[in-house]
Length: 470
Image (cartoon, rainbow, N blue to C red; front, side, top):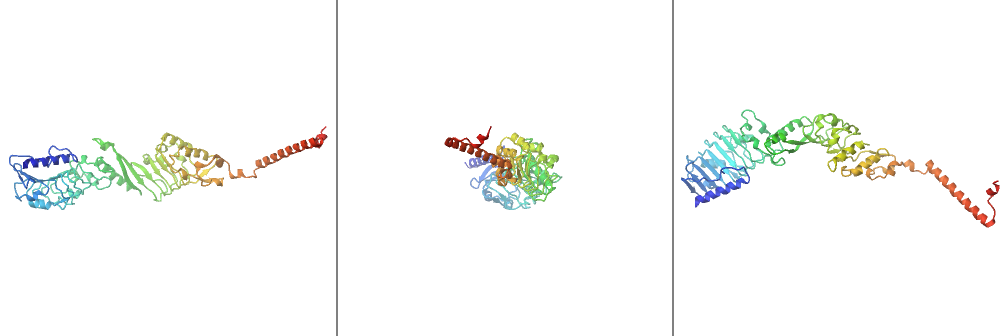
């Protein structure tokens, strides 16, 4: 009955780990029954004499009465409920073990490093736990350690110094949610002779957690390391925003990186000659840039989709007309510059191709000209693509002959306000004077005609002018 209970516990452990880790033929907590097996500690420990293997559940290993047994070769601790465990306490009770397994537990950390007293310990397996951190020199003093397996835990990062031991040659790290958004794991790229990275046998099976969940760790870390190196060549701040790729054997070759590069408020007088590769979003706000021709001539800008150029000194974007960049951009922000007009027809073609909310334009807070030559076409553009011009209410008249239109949203102007100047509305205009004179003459003549008709009816006399006509 006792043996059956222990075996049942082992099966439960195996099923639990199968939901969180990689499938295994034999889970560490599965007790193998043998003829010479015995249970101790009220079914909490189970010993197999044929392979000198002791399984203990929870902290029941402390109940083992044969402390210091030379015959014991393997110790397995399952279902450890506490967040930490003391390696020194284990070794003090079992100084001759060659293999230590801690599996299927709530363990989050080792309270201290393994002591040098564990002279015979060759293999350590800590798998299927909640292990989040390992002391910096956890295994340094294990003189005979050859294999370290910390697969299927909750490790997000690990100091390479924690993976150092005199004879350690084989390390397994797969199945952990590795943190890839910073430089904590770049050490794994060091493949020089004798490096810790060369001892990791499952490097190609390591994967990142959020925000690059499911992406293979090695290529993502390579991208981050390259980005850091390239960013150091600029005055900008760089960030790997996202990595896209198909998870599989060929993932490393299919990864596409999206980088955001921020060069705002750096006193730049021109667009940078170099930006990191894979830059899709570029911030150049608050500089003194006036020329956008690098977007056409410099190949480093080919992948830039979102460009923010607010509060610079740009007076014209005519050079972008017909360019490949203008045909493919996603966001263009030109707020707070010195633009008075732009090639309306060029943007008309671009926005027409883009369809709905694929493109975003920001054009506010510029000194736009409001005249009959430029504004009607520009106004049509703003009305037709209001959903794409995100700050359309801030696109206002600044340079206009009609003072009444100043600072008014161009989208809301009438054609009369656009095409008739203030001088054309004054009562002193010659055509208005002529119209008034002619109207007065018509009224006078009609009045004289009515008077003569009334006088003829009353007196029978013809008007004086009529009597003089021969």
